[in-house]
Image 1 (cartoon, rainbow, N blue to C red):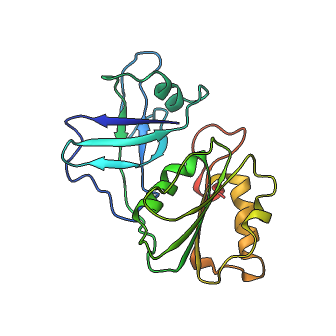
Image 2 (image 1 turned 30 degrees about the horizontal axis):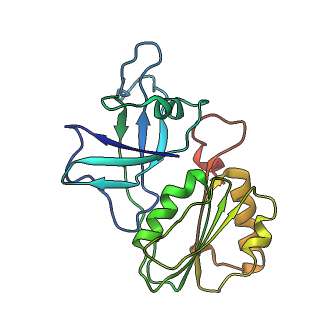
Length: 222
């Protein structure tokens, strides 16, 4: 993964970044591969290739926005991140809104693959110290998470055995999960089976699907 800081006169100092809005995201518009220019979409007309990225941090003094990228060469944003150097341009749209997650529960369970790690790390930074947090990460290279708080982190080489690792959960847990859509669907079904977790305490998102390029339609997310 690579963290890239974006800056520019168009970034507003009051850029919306609410605490515990850990999944808030912007749409990234990489340069057109033919012209090399960033072409933002008009209100009516063809839309360029865009990808959603979690807002990792924003510095209102420096007017700089941090985004974390999973590096790969098979998508427009991943290719841009691989070759980005100081001065490289990219378009940023949004965020269109913010969803604030609860901080008054006793336990959080966070289940992610690498695409959900930026939001997971925001949760670890922003949740009250009184909240017990368990994080399951599918894939990726193990590294410290949540340096400022006690947290139990389990790194899994794949999604095989994920549900066994989830196991029993506290009755008042809040679950936030994001990653490959079919894996996330299995997580949701497991947690809702026998009402292990109330629907209101689940926020589970399919960020991508194997074999599908680009963002998933909302009804197919997970």
